[in-house]
Length: 99
Image (cartoon, rainbow, N blue to C red; front, top):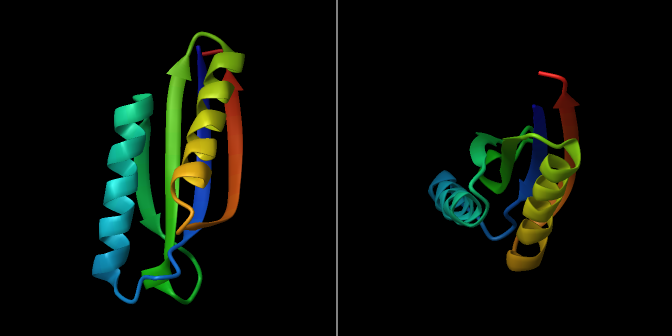
């Protein structure tokens, strides 16, 4: 079994409140879960503008390391392509195996 985890740091430049940030994040999380059937969690960003930062943690489990990595890559590409209003500041992907 292999586990792939991505941390995606996003900036929501149009957000002026925590409510707007939460709505944006909730919508994106629902779309990712519906399309890719992966686990997604959110956390506030680490910079000083908490209402404009979102960090998503995306994970999946599979038999093949290549498959799990490919699925997580597709999620990152999906975020970049479908949400041009969000800035992807940074992302990292880690694949662990041998479980």
